[in-house]
Image 1 (cartoon, rainbow, N blue to C red):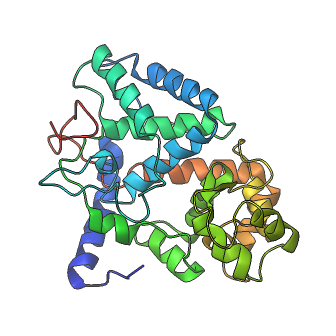
Image 2: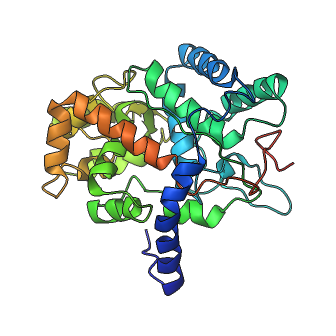
Amino acid sequence: MAFHSSHSNILCFSAFLLLFGAAFAQLSSDYYSSTCPKALSTIKTAVQNAVAKEHRMGASLLRLHFHDCFVNGCDASVLLNDTSSLTGEKTAAPNVGSLRGFDVIDTIKSQMETLCPGVVSCADILAVAARDSVVVLGGPSWSALLGRRDSTTASFTAANSDLPSPTMDLKDLLASFSNKGFTEKEAVALSGGHSIGQARCVVFRDRIYNETNINTTFATSLKSNCPSTGGDENLAPLDASTNVIFDNGYFKDLVNKKGLLHSDQQLFNGGSTDSQVTTYSTNSSAFASDFASAMLKMGNLSPLTGTSGQIRTDCKKIN
C-alpha cells in the first residue's frame, strides 16, 4: 500500500472531507419511496433467496459493496466488464478469482428494470444487498441511504492500490482505511465483516505454515485442506467458530490467535487495536452498533448524485 501523499492528493482528500457532509445530505433513506416503492422489498427477497441457496453469498455481496466503495467511491464501478476502451476492476489483484455475486446483482437489476425501468442504480443495489446480507445472517441493520448514481468509468489502478490486502501489517492496514476517512476504531469494526465468508488457501497459506502468532492446533487443522503446495482455491472460513452467522466470533478468534489472514491477526498482535478487539470479543452489541455506523459511513464514500454518472440499465456495462 503506497501512501498517496502528493500535494494534489492531499487537496483531493480535503475536498472529500468537505463534501462528506454534503454527500450525506444528498442521499436519503426514502429515495425510492415514490419512484420505485417495491424496490427495497424486492431486493431483500432476492438476497434472502440467494443466501438460502448458498450461505457464503451473504459475505460475497457484503464484499462487493466494500470493494466498490473503496475504489473511487460507491459508484458500481466494480461491476463493469472490460471493453476495448475500458479496463475494469474485476481483474485487479484484490478482485480476480475472488469477487463473486455478480449474477445475484444482475438478477436484482433485471427485476428493478421490470419494476421501474431506469430508476434504481446498480450502486444502490450493492448498498442494499450488502445490508440485507448482514441482516439475513443475523447481523445488525442500518438505514441504507440511497440515491447514488452509477459511474461511466472504472479504475484498475485504484483497485490495485486502494483496497486493503490480506498480507498487510497493522500500520499499512490502518493507513488504507485512514486514506478513506476511517478512524482506527471504524477500521476494526469494518474488519468484523470477516465474521462471515471464506478465504482461499492461497491467501492464508503463508500464515499457517510460517507465522508464530497462531494457535498451533488451529494451524494444523487448516493444513490438511491447504497443503504447502497446490490446493490454492481450497476454502476455509474467516471465522472458525460461527462462519455462517454474523456475530462477534471473529474477534474471539483473534484473541485466541485464530485469525485466518495475516491482516486479521494484525488487529490483535500487541498493537494499538488490541483493546478494541478485546472489547468487541466480549461485547457483541458494541460491535453490532459500531459496524452498522461504519457501514453507513462507508456507503457514503464519494457517491455520484444529481446529474453525475448515469443509471445503468445493465450493471456490467455503460449505457
